[in-house]
Amino acid sequence: MTATADTELLVEDMGAGILRLSEPVLQESERSFFYLIRGDQRSCLIDGGWGLGAGLPGRWLPGLIALATHSHFDHIGHLYQAATRLGHKAEAAIFADPQPEATQAAPWLYGRPVLMDGAAIDPITPGQRPCPLTGELDDGAIVDLGGRRLAVLHTPGHSPGSISLYDDSTQSLFCGDVLLPGHIFDDIPGADPALVRLSHRRLASLPFRQSFGGHGPVMDRDTALTRMARYADARSG
Ligand SMILES: [Zn+2]
Ligand SMILES: [Zn+2]
Image (cartoon, rainbow, N blue to C red; front, side):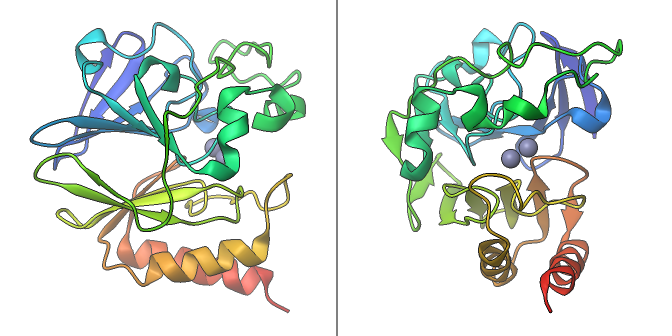
């Protein structure tokens, strides 16, 4: 894995045509991960970070398709830069008008020292540029990048319109915040622990080898399955 700083983005090459992106101005525990996936014919961006700094390099933008796993403030920031933006209709109104209460920026961000220098940021600042969907993705849709196809799964529970994307050519799963190595937020507005469990069951049925989430390290299959079992235990009985 190699890492380079590019227009204030940390860009990590994960192999298999997958670049992992994050914003190093944020403290590590606050960062979200978003991904640039290269196909033979075009590239897609999965999620868009907080939206801090200069944004995506201009050379990535021609033909870029942005896929939004969900509409929380820490994942939609740079989406506006892509001319094509696809996500689930259940959150279409939030992408179009990302008010801080709807994106969970408020009250979560108020006064929190999230930047590397210990400063807080105004919750209005990050991720609040409108990024209205130009098309909707529902369960079963396929996004064809040429030489690799991403299958869309509707995986609600963390938010009503959460989607996951599965690339079977590399057995890579991109699951936003519904499956994370660390805490899975399931008690925020729009979340539902029972739906998280159902979504986990669907994801577990895929033959993925690695899961790339919105936060925390990449998980191999065994680690991800163990994480799902631990979640189910914690939420049962
Ligand atoms: Zn989220
Ligand atoms: Zn998140």
